[in-house]
Image (cartoon, rainbow, N blue to C red; front, side, top):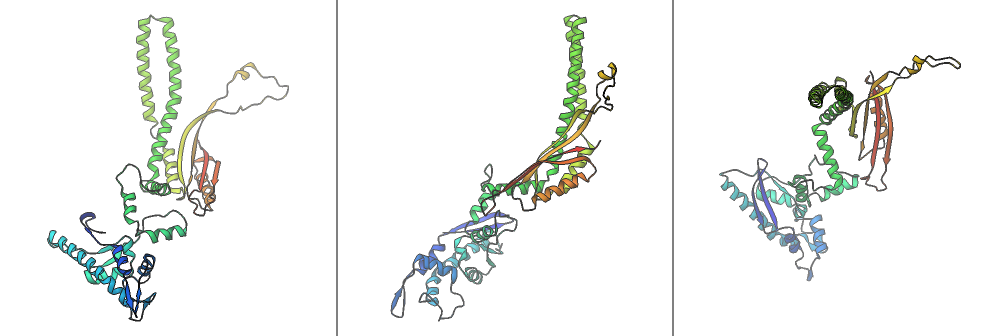
Length: 388
């Protein structure tokens, strides 16, 4: 069977089943031919070979033959099938034109196994009267794998066009594509919408959480002190009222802190730097921006035998806040120079002027034993300290 479908303005507008297809041409070829006093009959495999090599005998001379059978005789056996097929197509297009009050079909594309019959598009073009061609392989489909697999896809594309369309355009939850193609499709979507939006939201969330956490710890300590004072000096009723008032004030202060830390000029500039300088073959999977508190080193160290005063011994080191950036990522299809790309990216960050240090803390290269390299993986972790 064959299915004729007509698209109008990108939407399916008409379809009709034609009870005729590739097997009808095959059955016509395997019919018995009498030539020079002997009967010739091809097998199914020989008929398939003839369709791929000669197809519909178009422009051949009488002396040409296939396994002893003249091509003109084979053409005569295929002609009734071709006449029926072209007649059904012409009637369907005519019906559609009458239905739409004069709209014409501008082009006819062939898909499926039967579309590979040699010269089929040329014969239909001359008989139907509109441009006819095999459906070309879409340019915006990326094939994972080596050159051999890409060639196999092109050879099998016409056979599986319908299945491929269902996989790409399915309304089901999730994708029907194999895993490696889902990864490519996800990467393509991420590139289209831009990773900068996700990085900005993630960065703001980490800033808010880090600063609010530190401030909240300090405020909670104040609450405990205030509660202890209230318990010692006031009645239960007054202590309760005082605690409610203090809790309200602290909640308002925490809300104000969240509002103040929603924006950070340095972070926004760093996110823009990541978005512009990140190599195309890398994908960032984790981005963490945080404040850390560490003690500053002591400025004086007593010499051997030198006495240190009690005030100096009890003097606490001044705490110092630093900003740290941790990120990790990798590639599911790394090339031989993937480590060079990571090193160049880290050097670009170091030279940007925003960081004191940028270090690669860990990396992993998982190589494939298979020729198609579909399970290769490169992963890395890095850490940077921002300038004050």
